[in-house]
Image (cartoon, rainbow, N blue to C red):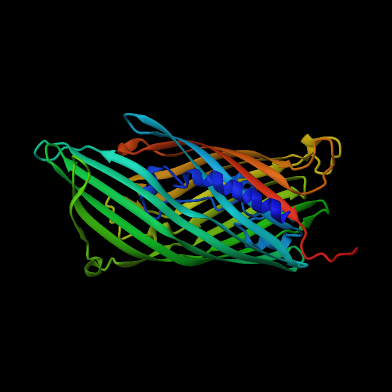
Length: 427
């Protein structure tokens, strides 16, 4: 099983590396870029809910869920996203394919589990242009581009000290490089100017969770969840170079490295505020579940002084998410369709990003299937599955000269199970 998982990961990396920019959104030019989902396909297809936990799936968003792990679970996922970017005058279609996560979880004691993995934390990837007219009536050509992102490695532990009560903690290490580039040229002028900025970023944060899941009438379960993702404390080492270049061949004419120490910008601190999540759900184990979550964040305290963007401010952010799943009969021996898990959800985000006095909000509808990796005519001989998900959504607005994003995402995840540390009974 381990060998098969490693082979699957190699295939996923090969596919995901085809376009690892991570995003093509113009809104990734702000802050630290687009924050990624940081959740498995199973969670994402239920609107991103984190409160549900079971014994065979990794839940990267909820460390308390590792207390439920009974088998070693490997998981990996990729996504393909189609975007339609539209402003007041025109629209453009673009796409991006990514490796989303690699993770593993396994039991370390009767009521305790451990997990670790790697995933993107944020992504920058955009190409924008504008052509205003200066005071002398000349056209000014501006081209903006950015790329890069932050990755995250994490280690989680979950424990159930008393029946139905689980606690967990995660330590995250975030690291990566963001690059921003601006080119400007003026009509009938032979030379243009270029402003290149780079931030090398790293830092830690922690995630704490508590699940309380009492049984009701011996058949149903009430799911409650409290999660706190602490402030992300990042240190950014910055550099900036300003140069002139020839419009004829693009070659640099003259350039200087800006002394950022004099401005106090060579080393800056970035603090992404704490996110608190409250969740409530109800369901029948291995049969069905329905739940909702509310998250809030005081994002108004965030800033990135090095970028110095005048048209953006941050307000407090919040997210409402609802999700459900249904498995007709996971033990069915004769009907494969009954062993499929059907998932659906929706999510509404007030992102806290305000550009040109316009709030940038996001709405998405999700749905998908968990397909058991067993024969159609055979019984449920393992708990491994292939998860396929879809998401339709919209973010932003065409008001104030901004861009509206409509997107369609296809997500594929592998969830493989195995048993470790079992003694041989026959030599």
